[in-house]
Length: 294
Image 1: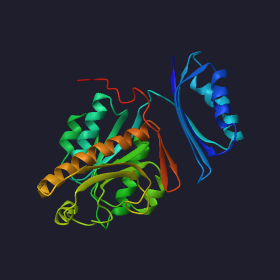
Image 2: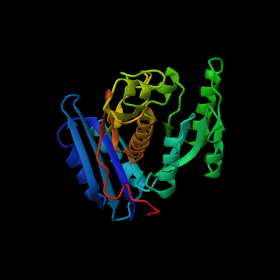
Image 3: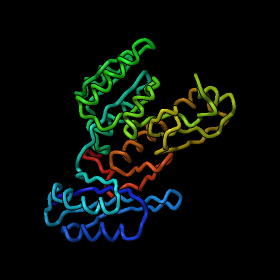
């Protein structure tokens, strides 16, 4: 039986849930998991529904017939197959911990993505990527060629069909034009010291200040550097006995797990942008199950 995920956001009003559930029942669909949120501050409604088409109704039929409800309630909505893997382009510079973690999770099936390519402004991870049968693209970026470099990147996005760009410690600032063009489709990771510890060696700065909690934040990329809508965060405790190297090691572990959870939430369509913030629903049962366990 086909399994789908329906996502909806629209102005808040009476009857939305009844309209959705009634339609699905008429189409012979059973709801297996659902989450919803009505934001009284923005007057927006958000919901994510996992469903099974017990009568074998096609995706095309559901899309066609749900369109009227979408129009009636002024919805932004989408329907995807639960087994559909999102095409993702990963970008990395010289720190590979997030890249290798994403590749591993993708390979064992806990992260439902199809990595269509890895882009880097360095050659450090070319062999790793190619050995995983993934295309590697070296795009050198300088002040002089930034426009041309981003044009190449957008060409890769178009040619590969990438739906999402993941900045896995990619240490180049994207232009405002690129951020706007790919709005809601670029995810970044950074240490949670920002804005307290900007610039070079943030972990050394934190060590020198005696910080007791280090962490990471994953967010959508906007023209405002490191200030896009937050998807996922985590912290870990350190003590006076830790060295600078410990801070870096702990930080990289947190960065990897936070970025992976943010990407998982996005590709499972659990994230909704709500102004400058996000609504992030819990993972459905079984959504972290792996094709290759152990």
